[in-house]
Amino acid sequence: MLDIPLWKRVVIWGLVALGLMLALPNLFYERVEAHNDAVQAIEQQGATPERLTAAESWPDWMPSGLVNLGLDLRGGAHLLAEVHLEDVYADRLDGFWPEVRDALRDEREVVGTIRRQPSPGSELRVQISRAEGMPRALEVVRDLARPIVSLTGVGGSDIAVAGQGDELVVTLSEDEQRATDERTLRQSLEIIRRRVDEVGTREPTIQRQGDDRILIQVPGIGSAEELKNLIGTTARLTFHPVVGRTGDPDAPVEGRNVVHPSMDEPGTYYILEPSPVVSGEELVDAQPSFDQNGRPAVSFRFNPQGARRFGDYTAENIGSPFAIVLDEEVISAPVIQSHIPGGSGIITGQFTVEESTQLAVLLRAGALPAEMTFLEERTIGPELGQDSIDAGRIAALVALGAVLLFMALSYGLFGIIADVALLLNIALIFGVLSAIGATLTLPGIAGIVLTIGMAVDANVLVFERIREEMKSARGPARAIQLGYERALSAIIDANLTTFLIAAILFILGSGPVRGFAVTLAIGLITSVFTAVYVTRVIIVMWFERRRPRTLEV
Image (cartoon, rainbow, N blue to C red; front, side):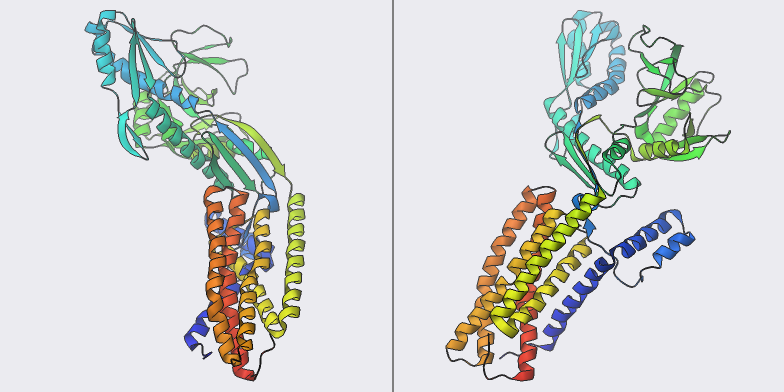
């Protein structure tokens, strides 16, 4: 009656062995971590004697996955940033102006001369000299509208056009503003993630909060200021025609031309045309390098569209200065000496090697679509993280010791078997966390401690049921069989409801709440496995060997 087929025993012990193998690297955390870092560095940058030595510190045939430590355990930096979504509206309308200008020029006989007027960033105002031509102007500009493309489909118009006297007013439609906000947040998240990944940090948390905020937590980084320097700048690179130079930052300019300071020449300001010829969005690569004089520089390369526009402009403007602008500062303003057809070039300036490397990282990762304001910043030192680990370890050991002692005193040999299953359960939790690359936080440790207390509930139900069956004058074998069968429904009900709560916490929660939910859910699954299957196999193997006439449960 207690017979368990051989294949079931092999599967159960095979899963236990696999879990122990996956959990084993966490006992040698620093060695395995150094091995993983060395392997990654060899793949990306090549082998060195130091890297090879570190890579050989852990066998290649062994699992090398680790439970990643969260910000509160490893230490690191925490930032909460607000994205200025309105900046994107102004950029969109600035980019739309050349289309409006060209379209209205074709209707000059009807609308007369056209001139862009000063306006807030959320509007594009165009004055026409013939007010009677406003209906035709509205019709022409409305024809430039495009359908809105968003995650929910395609529909609506991206612009709203209205006439006010002799002025034509173009704004983004409400639907387009919502779609733009969504794209801006998604693009900002991806660019921040790429910039953080460039410096090789482990398991950062980068996620959206609310309508216009982004949470950034990076374990292992030195300080919040260092993280801000990495992601805080927009790294917006543009290339503009130069109108003139001046020493007055408030010099009057004609039309909508702009004044930017020089990065290399303090006190020098460049008057530039506002619309760039090409921008950093068309860059496909940027690498630190050196110029012909051996000074640090950054080489870049455009995509085919940007290369064509860059080449056409240089061919038509040989002998004219050309400004390279980074975040509203002129890095360099060289004179175009010849046609540059390949779409590649080099940015020179007063860089150090570190600055040129950092600039290349920012350009390669892409420009943030809008500026960010940091509302909250926090640096968590590694000492505080170690204190959290120590406190969590003490809590887990105290809980584990109390449960082990209670089970052994309450159920004798069967309690000791339950204790063995509990220890295997903890190992399996770490094995699963390592396999999925999960991040362990302080609330996650709380989830593990809670799992330790809950893990023996299933065994208590089984053992109490076995006691009841023994009182019914059934034999030991039949009592064990019925104990497991009749307690199973109660075990599943209790753990399923808790698992549903963990799933809801994971779906609706964020950050630490999710960490707690993950460890709790994994602990529930492994505890049911060890309590129902592992303990049953051990008890059956013991029963087959001893054949007792009665059970002391």
